[in-house]
Image (cartoon, rainbow, N blue to C red; front, side):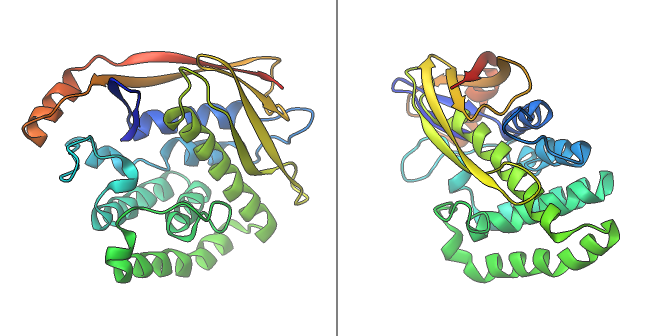
Length: 263
């Protein structure tokens, strides 16, 4: 779950809904200034499915013991995260080996600061089980050569498409975690400009509730709109995880529309 404090309520976006937004970005990406991802389908699959493992945990979400607030994805118990990510990587690989490679890189990259593209990224409890984390990363990285050789994939393309997946993921997280009701900007980087190795930074400026401009503008049309499903749950003290889950799943899903225009 991706949890944002809105003041009187918690905004909660489930990981598959966040990933659906990633796929929307992937399929609409490409402009005069920024190249479209290629090959598209493996990137679209990895964008849609890179967080599939979370769907298992989100069947029974929990509260933080210390604060009583809904537990967000960065605060999940890491041994669980490692296990359901292994299952996710295996399932995606079965559908598309190229997408499986990208999701394997994504899983390992969570614990490597997105391979230096976001060094600050860190799961809260990762250092508590560092031996398990290091074993998971080594396991995934040791499998990269066989995955790459089976695809006859150039190293440059692999890393650019990994960067693309991170861009779609981080842009979706921006819309899930930032205050888009009142407007909160950001800078997204590094963003691949082409397949020759050029990169840029995208400035995101708020224009109003759930409306932003992006410069350089990355999408195919003159204006882009994307739906995002979320739940808003009034803040209170829940007596148990069970009480929270009951209220959460009984809370209607609402769809908000994100609008993006050129900066």
